[in-house]
Image (cartoon, rainbow, N blue to C red; front, side):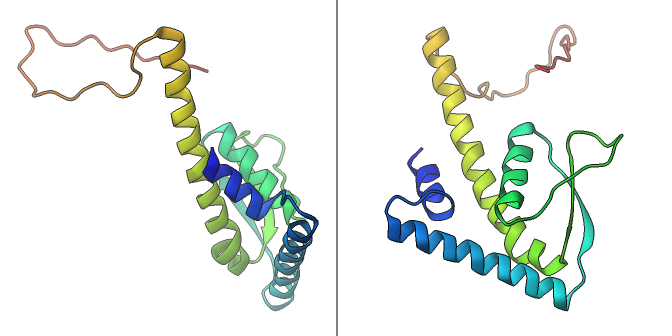
Length: 148
């Protein structure tokens, strides 16, 4: 949680007026860099496929933060996000920042999920323990399930 707060403080909502101004200037520098790259390198249409809603929401918010208009075409899956950007901006700025934020968010969700399960069910959450494989008497029964 603290790491998310630090990232948010760096990127989104600084506390003091000076920090707010510094964050706004940083955002303006990134937007100016984006415009400069667009002048040097024409924007091309990118298609991003994000596996879960949390990553998609984070990515869309990050693009909007920099004045980028995310969209998708009718008939495209909800996991698809389209945008017209310069390749350099995607490779050097947008995607690395998204990956850092997404990694932190995923770690937070994992810890939160374990904590909620442990509190609700009063047992330790987590992965199944690993053991040596012994030839089973009968083949294991499989169950394909989905939460959604």
